[in-house]
Image (tube, rainbow, N blue to C red; front, side):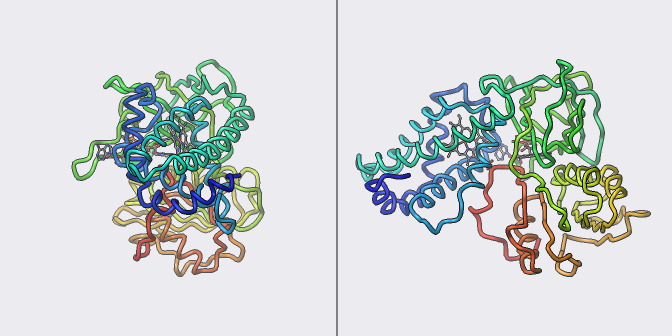
Amino acid sequence: MLSKESSVVVAATAGIVAAHAEQITACFYPDMLAAHPELLSVFNLGNQATGEQRKALAASVVAYAVHLIDPEAPSFTPILERIAHKHVSLGIRPEQYTIVGHHLLKAVGTVLGAAVTPEIARAWDEVYWLFAVQLIAEEARLYTRAGVDPSRPWESYRVVERIDEAVDVVSLVLSPAAGTEVPHHQPGQYVSVAVDLPNGTRQPRQYTVSTAARPNTLQITVRRVRGVDGAPDGQVSNFLTSAVAVGDVLQLSRPAGDVTLAESTKPLMLISAGVGITPITAVLEDVAARTPQRTVVLAHADRSAEHHPLRRATAASLAKLAETTRYTWYQEPGSVTGTDQEHFRPGLMDLSDLPIPLDTEVFMCGPLPFMRGVRRTLIERGVDPADIAYEIFGPDLWNTEPAPSVPA
Ligand SMILES: Cc1cc2nc3c(=O)[nH]c(=O)nc-3n(C[C@H](O)[C@H](O)[C@H](O)COP(=O)(O)OP(=O)(O)OC[C@H]3O[C@@H](n4cnc5c(N)ncnc54)[C@H](O)[C@@H]3O)c2cc1C
Ligand code: HEM
């Protein structure tokens, strides 16, 4: 709990810190990475270039401070869980919190200048360490549960198969190089994959396990990210989809991630766009194997049939379910043939006239603007917001931007 003195100071300064939070984190990262170049291979440099990670860090610290001083604030547990799982997938260690804390509070001083009195600095230092201690404790619990030594988070996996899934999308089937069993994952979880890039840098990224749990192999499905408007092509996705061959060895973390399928018998709606279909495919395979009596509605949006990954895998799972409906939207519908025409709709996903069973639980994954629009429609259609689970393929910026005014 925040001390009484610090609560007063934080309440009085939260507004100004929030208003400058992105400036503070924008100053923090270059300063810390210059002082600790060893962290360049821990942080996602793509997110550094786009500024997404600094927005996520800023938003989380402000949300944490608000939750400390406002008893009416929404539960902080989901944010804490998401960060802890991400940290654990990257082998973040308690001693690194001292480095982050030092540079974060230094950045507060740099940006806010003389306004930061020793009293204010002390109060925000207390906020930081309360947050840090909670994260360290949760991360210790997750490491212990997975049997992982955080100083050695990476395990070698050999690529045993490469599957061309769709335009620009490749699945890599991986097997532990040591011949050990694959650690169990919950459908919806991801692994971090660390690759040594041709330019000499090492970079980690997260990839969802795109099947239900299997004892000997683990599959990831990667979409090649192409640079638009002069931005460079995505580093790791291009490496994985074009340079990695059967027989190569990759470094993987244990599966992590807090967005998983809850045990339930209620109707389930699985919604995805593009490569957001990876957790959906894993969840669907798991439901088909363990609770095939569940009513499942599958809704997917993509550019075209040729861009639609994991179609065979999802069709195979759907065939095992007692009651299912499938809807597919393609922006370029020219290529739809045969059975795909069933429940096919042209254009962007629109759920406004779809039958949605009572008490439906939703699991969705896709770009943020897409998910914001879908969520709004679902709530308008009577779905309980608490029943909508979502995964984001990047730092969580869900609460940092306004909802778009047009439906996705
Ligand atoms: C929990 C989770 C699960 C995920 N699951 C999957 C999955 O199953 N399948 C999948 O394909 N992906 C998945 N992702 C996304 C994946 O982790 C990577 O983010 C994605 O592959 C892009 O990484 P990259 O290295 O190729 O791109 P990066 O090099 O990181 O680039 C990312 C973007 O930043 C832009 N950029 C980079 N540098 C600059 C610059 N200087 N200026 C302007 N723009 C720039 C690039 O053009 C690109 O659009 C997941 C992410 C998360 C967080
Ligand atoms: C109280 C301290 C910390 C807070 C509040 C914090 C917060 C966050 C947040 C909000 C994210 C994004 C999660 C997501 O939505 O995906 C994140 C990711 C991350 N954090 Fe932390 N963090 C802290 C400490 C640390 C420490 C000590 C390290 C180690 C150097 C670290 C390294 C990382 C890395 C590497 C990522 C992934 C970055 C990316 O993918 O761009 N963090 N953290």
